[in-house]
Image 1 (cartoon, rainbow, N blue to C red):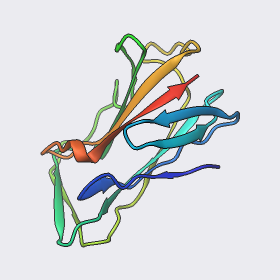
Image 2: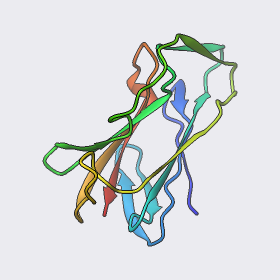
Image 3: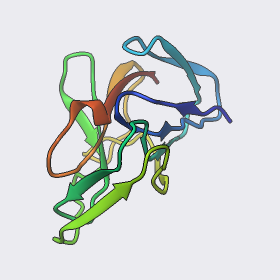
Length: 148
């Protein structure tokens, strides 16, 4: 099991862990990181936030959704989105993080099926993982490359 801990900016996505059964390579050129992921049967995403700054930070959310994941093919077409077809409770909540504090890590296992419930064909894809707070901050997102 390989884990990728991302510390992107002042307030950052804490972790994206890709777990798989084979050893295909996914690369995040933006961060210069190499992720070893088995994408033959599933990918497990583990996502959280860490305050890497010097003061308390508050993230405000407009629903129970904490993160989203979008996977696009080489042509830039959305082939799968975590939130597709899901409903989230409409509520306002805050996540307060002291300096150095991390949120609870959420986990999602993706079965490599597209939004149409068909298996994705072999190829290269980009996955954008982001926190869904009300004031979107690109520092709370990352893009990784996947090869299936």
